[in-house]
Length: 402
Image 1: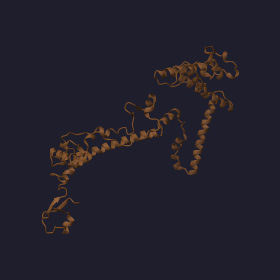
Image 2: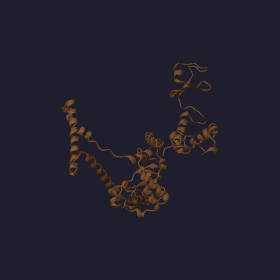
Image 3: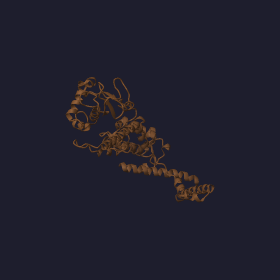
Image 4: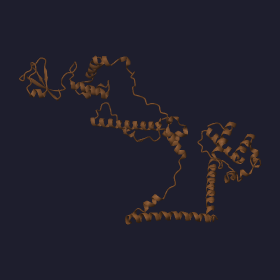
């Protein structure tokens, strides 16, 4: 029965099936003789269960049930081709559901109580999207109600299945067309698994926390013009030897450094700096002025009114190291007893403390109303000063923890 055609001896009782190789070799087996009468039959036209269903029809019946499902007898009947819907239904119920196979493998009381044996992934210690605040979710592009990102991996993957036509019940799809649709669904499922794998990898390696750390500490590097210079002069290397090109590039780099130094010296001369050692002090003052401008711009954007004298000098233009008592400084009478003690212990100008206190209280009020804020701090306060002032305001009840 390994071939599509088989030989059946009609004289032997019961009938004997003979393969083509044995028939060609005139094999004698039991009562069978080579001269007995015979007939040819297809290899799938033998009965395998009770009834008039041969092996080929029964195999096609099982294929149709697997494809269309139990109960869609019209579709199953068209797939079999030689049997009607009623015959297909009776054959399945008698041979499988109510027969010996069904009695051993199927129980009506367990219908709908299938158990999912798929192993669940172990919980990870990394931060997930659902553990973030609303502001962090917006920055990350995570949509909590939809349980997905605004832009996913392979964001156009849904187009593979969104345009599929399910067809009508009275239409029989071509085998090639059905296979094409199934392949598109498999491609879509593979992309969904890839999305889930990437999301799980981000949670396993705590990449979300690392993302926000890099966003807060990232500073763009200054652009180096040397690669651009090399690209522009690459054409010249075709007309030079290797030593000539190295000497040429070295001279070009030296020329660029000299031009930069000349520009710097001209800036010194323009601002009245005549000695080289005074140039370093000038650069420090220039950086300080630029920082003051940046702080003033941040204060204006946040709507905070900071005295200009504070922005011009970290301590309001006064060197506190030479002053033993800060009670003579402006703004001292506005402080409470505990605030006076704090400013005295920190050697802090009262106006600078009042300005920083105003910034913190305003930021706290805006955040409690749900606004997204950008903290703005006046210049002249180091990290230790800010931390002690913050703790003091928390303990005094000026602000609440957030």
